[in-house]
Image (cartoon, rainbow, N blue to C red):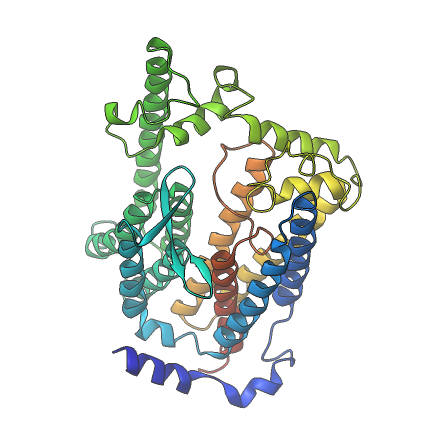
Length: 416
């Protein structure tokens, strides 16, 4: 099966038009130009965020971006319809990786006891959850392409199949635990369902279930807060004390993040709420034009923790050093990428291509919104990186692969 897949993969490469990539008819240059700009922002500000340290991860980021460029071009040269035929193969491979990472001694554990990585010789740590997002995208688009949706009753069989296909990898990702990566999958799937003309009753019911889940989590976090106060335990030092008293698969540090957002006065601002408060200071101190590149003090002096300044909180560094003008430039570049993704989804000549382009665009929208909203205090702190800007090898490669798919949808839209 694997051999057949790679043979067809090579046959699908559009090598004949490789040197025609710059023609407007066959290549969309809008997204690559914006991605290049965002990537340069990332490299420069990773350098700035780590200026006071001996780390040089901006160089590693350049290597990942170079590899990502190869992934992007290769994916764009492949006819995206190939993935419809092999979506199940990619999906099963992703499940295998997610199961592998949960095995003690195989999966690598970093901070908070989360086992999210596999060590790959020569490449470093690989995060299977990023590949799982791509696999879920393929699986969802494949199922919806081969199904006709109408009322919820008529579509029940498809919805059950889809629930299993999406639910299994999400549960495995939550088990790592990596709640952030699991949560970004749901909006992507719901958007693809929405454009597939599923009855609005389904979305009304899903909204009700979501509200119920939010209520259950809120009640659990409130009970956690009462438990910690009644037992006079410390929120920071005594993590894990409440977990055995709850039926929800949440870690205490995750409950702390919700409390730091909803009830900051109950949480020690020098501990759990520190990142959020320092991020707000970084963003607010930038003013209109910022303090200047490498002149920011929050990351340089360690107030914005150096463990997160170059990845999850990179937008805070940009806002401090380039101010409102730099921030709005980054947001504008993302806006163009997202708008162009929707445009290409509308240009697609088949359902599979439209679903792929839409799914990628919604996934990026969630990443951008949650990451930036987190840095300015609109949502609880969550480990969701900013595409092409945050440091991270697997994430960079997955972003390049996903945008390469959108480029493929554009390039092969006329081949029908």
